[in-house]
Image (cartoon, rainbow, N blue to C red; front, side, top):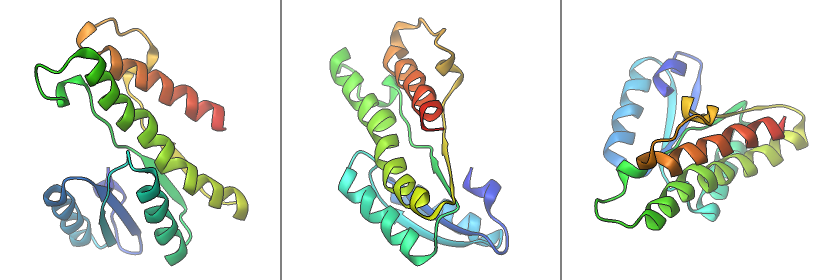
Length: 151
């Protein structure tokens, strides 16, 4: 997604937990002409995300914030009980979205400018009945409803 926005004159602030992948995407975006700041961060850490968003917005007001972090049950180590998988999925997909969007939204509303994008999934249509991805589907239904509610 970042590569789609990357071009000369565009400033991107990218976050991810996996530094190697973050650095690779940063380099690809810079090669396309964007000015990129890469910040290792975990969306499940509210204080960290508030600091990241504040620093980025203080540097230059954010026009667009995309809440794109996500995981599914398949990202949780095998053998984990369902309740544990649900907790990991919801920490990332639900609270990660809140932790990304909330500090940005407060600043955007105060200045009367900015857009928020919350990435969902076809699973957000609520039609998934696959027991191996029930937490993922539920989190994406939540994300869709949350985004619509913020309008």
